[in-house]
Length: 91
Image (cartoon, rainbow, N blue to C red; front, top):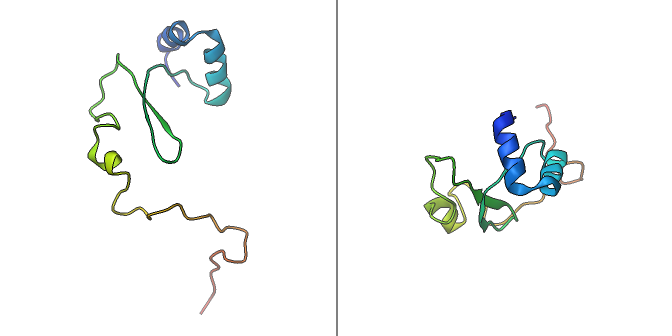
């Protein structure tokens, strides 16, 4: 949850229509400059007012390669509630 001043500032920046859309979907207001989209469709924005210690996704070495050492090469389907789901058993 953001402060009332941040909410009003973002309302002025993004407009009433986008403000209502964000409040209905994510319950918070966000404003910034579009930076990049990853392979799963997540969009990254940069806010010019707040300085974060992290680099933007376009400059981060881990995000630029697109894969971390512990990630699988491709997305694996969630098998819950199917015949191939993991089932525990007693020994």
